[in-house]
Amino acid sequence: MSREKFQRIKAAYGDFTQGLLRKGQLPLRSTEKGFWNPASDEEIYEAFQQLGLGRYKSFLDIGSGDGRVVLIASLFTPKAEGVEIDGELHRVALQMQEKLGTNAVFHSKDIFVHDLSAYDILFINPDAPMERGMEDKLLAEMKGHLILYGHHFHPRFLEKKLAVNINDTPITVYGKYKRG
Image 1: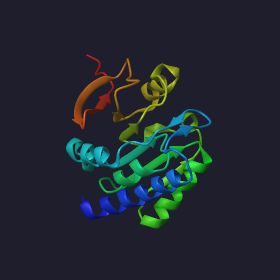
Image 2 (image 1 turned 180 degrees about the vertical axis):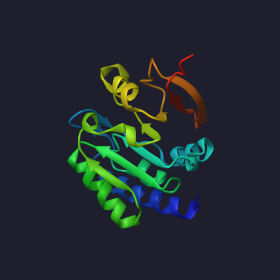
Image 3 (image 1 turned 180 degrees about the horizontal axis):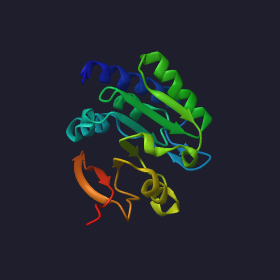
Image 4 (image 1 turned 30 degrees about the horizontal axis):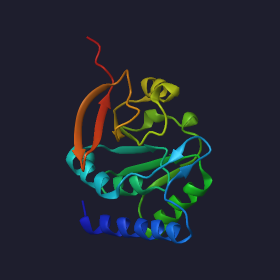
């Protein structure tokens, strides 16, 4: 995985964040269905290395926001996609994808109408408790694993498989319980 390509992604999002700050806007806000608070580029890159993301063929970021996690995932896996309902954030993701020339794909729609079964690894930086419908969707459609970023809103009915800690941020991999 090219550290140089990652540095290009990180620089592009650094410029984006600085642009927001110059306009007096923070790089976080409410969206139509939740809250956008982007993950740390460095933490995601390091976690994807440690978790061996390259062994997966298809990646989906649930609530992909400005697209940074998907673009970083595209350095590791041949199929990296994101789903985001917020039109403004979706446009940012498309602009970054075009600027950086990656093979990432971004869908502008509600995650609850997107089929999760086509992906072998899912990612979420949750902005709401899982019991508000997301865990049921995961249990019904998830075929592989889920990477959950952060301390909060962990699932109750998925099995913790692995966890890494990057800069005191837990990044946890979940799967379905095996039936005995």
